[in-house]
Image (cartoon, rainbow, N blue to C red):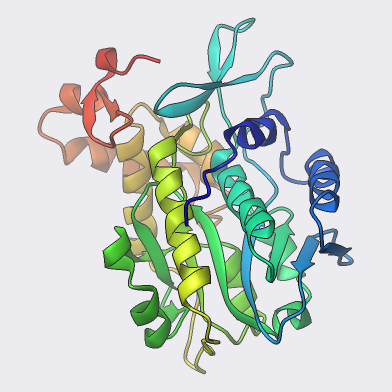
Length: 336
């Protein structure tokens, strides 16, 4: 469990602009990268999702990630700047920060690292997650029939283990017990629409989870990756692959539902605002309307107004952001 992450590869992934529906450059890069790995075989389905598998085994650990990003602006002089603690995007010509697409290029990196390290492994790279999980909704479910479980690394932050979406569980209690999330600094949470949810809806019959993968302020130009948190995720994934060698069956029940109630949705949006209190209702609508298609601009305006009312000291709230250690501080102390 000592293999370090390939930071140069991650910055290369950031440099490839892959907005939803225009993932061809990313797919071409991944095909080239994966073909260089001994023993890795590749395939595509009719929708264009990319499948990779390695080794001969009765069962495989499986990891999935999505290829697309929300950010539409990607200047020609985009650079991924790496410091000791974080990575962020920057354009010198525009004198501005640029979104990395770390949601979900961080997950792509973890998937690539597993295919490099392990003799028996499966991975899938889905198109168009950000616009409604279209890629995973067209996945070839037979590919997963010999998988022990499915791991997705596509959650912001550094400590969430998504085991439930809507009112439906994604995995068995046995799987949660064996991966022992608290030991590795993770806790069970309820999540929102993502690829493992779409797979479960289509009949995936093994346990699945979604893990925090160290991006913050996703979908914005101020998106950053905290390196220490990404290393934490990588260690957790290695633990699962190396120590959880059983198959963990799980099927959603007849009464399962993947809809979201009003309170869950609004709580998620309040969490997003807390990460970046400068976001306006229009910003939220532009960036997250595909995630919450039931919400109108007026709904986002109401939620933003309520969020501001809930904080006694609005000025203090509006000047807070995240330091690389995950603690909140004043913006003037957050120097790149």
